Structures are given as structure tokens and as C-alpha cells.
Length: 153
Image (cartoon, rainbow, N blue to C red; front, top):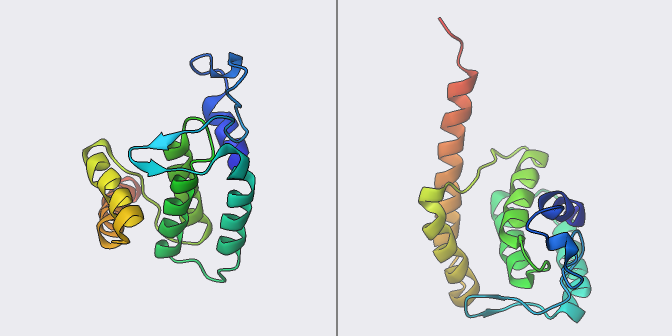
């Protein structure tokens, strides 16, 4: 499913599918970086993703915190050459829906807080900043949903 999301996102964009080294819908073939964070080497991605999915699938009742933890671990692996953030956020949205949790998306105005939250979480084990950013985004999304579901009078 994750590889399919990547294929849907990247197929036919910016000639990525024409670059021999760029694997649309498949894991990366070259190293990539996220700021100062070292990501999984291409040769380790398949195993790292299997380990991540095994860990996640053992959680019987997933909470928002579990979904965020998955996202942080996914971003640290950075399994694709490009589009990891968008795929990771799509997975969070899907997992919220799948687990009866109000979903959310990171609005442009909260992008800086989201990026800072990921860094704090990965580098300092400080989870609160990212969780608060996601909770705030969830509140904003819930307000939009309620607005669109209101009956007209």
C-alpha cells in the first residue's frame, strides 16, 4: 500500500519516472538526507520498513500517539527518493480514518511547527511539540468537518 501511494503521488511528475535511478513506486536507490538527520541506507530500507510495519502491526488498538510515532520512524527511514513527507502524512491521514480517529492535515501555516516537531522528536526524544502540532491541526480539521456537515436553515 505504501509503495502504491508513492506511485500515485510521483508517477508522471517532473520526469521522475524517466530517471533510471529514481524508482517511482519503489524504495530509493540513492542516499538521501533530511537536514542533519541520517536516513536509512538504500540497502537497509526494505528491512527497516519491514521492522517498522511489524512493530506497528503488533499494536492492537492504535492511538494518535502510535500513528505519530509511526510517522516519525517512517520519516527517519525516508524510504523513497522523494515525496517521503507527503507519503508519510497521507499514511497518518489514512491510519486516523482506519482507526476511527479524527484525521488531520498539516496546513502551510503550521509547516514550520511540524518540521520543528519532527526534529525535536527525532533528535531530542521530545514528543510534545509534534504531538501538540498534530492535535492543533486535528482541531482545525474537525472545525472544517463540522462546518461542512452543518444543516442549512
